Length: 364
Image (tube, rainbow, N blue to C red; front, side):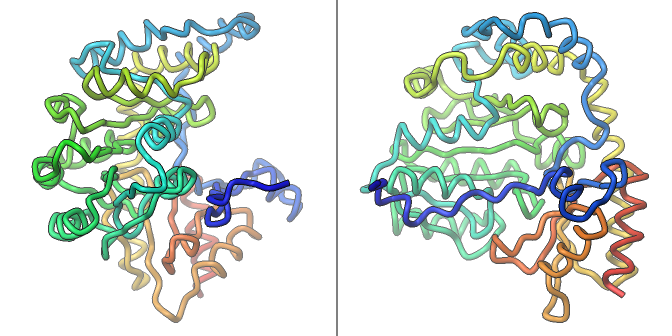
């Protein structure tokens, strides 16, 4: 069978390893496995969401409300935008896919930072587009502008806070980039971790309202992180109505499930749960920063719910990740991103205790 030629240059996205794999391969009891690899909310899901899922379980045979009216109403109120400014996806990843399919082909290109979310590149390559990257993982204005003027990309991705590094770009810097790009280039502001950055330092807080005045900018958000719905797959894009209208042509009907829709509606109303999640994170991440300082490790200052440890030539991130995996601790090896580094989701106090115990033994 002959497949599309573009597939030859695409690597399959490598997701964080599941708990089930560790149980199967190393015989570790599920309750003893600590998963700190996929930036999931360590305290789980809001009790209100759990109750909603239970109450709607007998509706699983029904298609969801494809207008997603109630969820859009919640997002409209939260961000002070109209419902026709919103598109819902099966995770914000799906909105990224809509964007690539709408704008890219073999004659176009995209621009992103040196190390950022892998799906930007994968979706672009699926459409045959060229990939250009800046020299730094940070979103530096001068680097982006130099590459923009040279390549005139169709899409520019700004991931802030950035995954998998954890750094963030200030609102002023993002708006400076946006203001320097012409209308023929779409700018994607990916705010999957924005709740954490906004809580840490308002200088890094960006809202959809901030970019809604630009016809070539779209803001992406998700319920997977601070809202604890990673397993339900609900995200969204917010932009001017004309742009959203075009993206809708790529959206399949019923693209999120009945239970996912109900869960997202309930989650959007539970601000207390989000505040508790962020408070736990702010408390526990200090332990990772202190551990790094005490053990001579370098880390990237994080504005997300994870932290990235950078290693020198004396330590190998892949060996570290494998040694931890065999001990029942799942973290993310960033070798696939070209970095000798590991990314660790900030867990509960108990989960973090387990990580530090095993990691101390591994690095010794």
